Length: 422
Image (tube, rainbow, N blue to C red; front, side, top):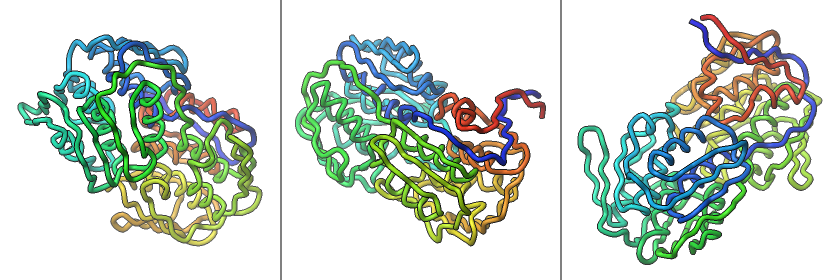
């Protein structure tokens, strides 16, 4: 059987400057929120990703005309034709549950199934459903489908047991169409929440507190589409910085938002990298050896992000000394570690804790990306490893990175996308 893979010949320092892509985790909810805005929405700086194409297919099936050309996505919403998302479309994208809130806001009903995507462990959609119930939605399951309906959406006070990004976004997108005031406490504070609120406010919504633990939405305002630029992708920026740290050299990531990466940049400095910031440019220089990071614990923003956990593990694998990573967000986010060990990493895992003893060098191997960020971490490790690494499972990487091989090669890496016979 033949499949498409990345072949990475490592061992050379990275040097150069790249412009960071638009944020996947912001573009997707922004696309979904077009469902609650009449007329045309134009999003710019949208990354060209398989997840974006999956979201576009869902919008078109619902009756919101969506076209993507380059990094611009145009959506025209003049009334939805259906409120049901087919199972195949739900399975194509892990974050497809984000359509629940805006579909309910637009049509007062929604039919969907369980989402798919990366297998990172349970992502409790019951939190999404419970939030909708508090806004007046009745929900029942029938034949594997989740049937949601409301006579009207009403504002509510909703306290989240965990500060879930997806649940916070779903509530906001439903609440702008609800009657009265919605208050969300213990809300997620990620920059992507702020980006969504800024876009909806530009469309005519009244949302306050986005980016804090208490978000207030005054519902019922008429919303009209607008033009909006998607924020930079902080995890993509961290990916290329970590590749520079793993391989050595000097890398600059431009068109970034350094304030979104404070916890990540602090960790890279602890590892022995020199970091410089000038406006929207982040400079990383790693000319000396790496030292391991004693302890990292993933946390909701502004803590160290779970999406960057695999990336920093790639750096720690060849750092002097021993470091510990504790994963607190997802149960199954260490699947990539077995693949790093194929490359010579010395790692012990107990539950949600990984102990990484740095080795002098990693070596090339045939490895498989188990998920999006795990695949990116394997690439970051491979550019610093000796010999050739073949990375399989590219469909995961394509979900979140635009033109992955080209960007790496622009920094002086030797990355080729081609076929591989198993």
